[in-house]
Amino acid sequence: MENDKVKPKVAMNDTPNGWARNGVNGVTSVLLVVLRAIAVALAIFLLAISIPLFFLPIPLGLPLAIIGLILLAMTSKRAHTFITDWLKRHPGVWERVKHIFDRFHKD
Image (cartoon, rainbow, N blue to C red; front, side, top):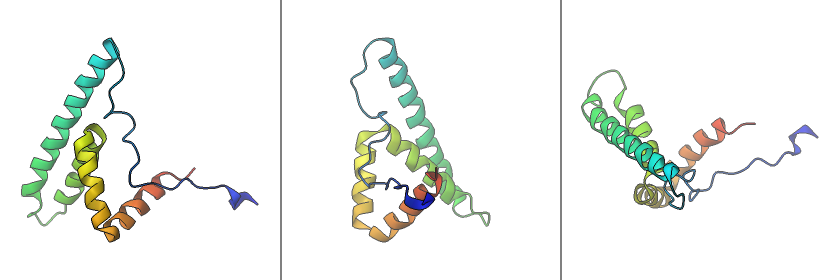
């Protein structure tokens, strides 16, 4: 009966690990704002780099774009809402994304 463990399902509207929420005061909030700004800048940089790399024979553009979108969704509530709304309109893509997240959440 080892397989009776209930595996948590990834919901489309899961919160992005608290990064997009406010509610922390003091030095921690300043640190979170700085980390969020760095993450957004890195995500935009990855997205900008991925555009010209789409045209190379080596497939580097798509993984960089996906990493950039995930990072942007984790740090921005508006981007998270936009991406989850887009995934709701395209359920086939959501099934693939859910399958990837399920592979990483094996415990």
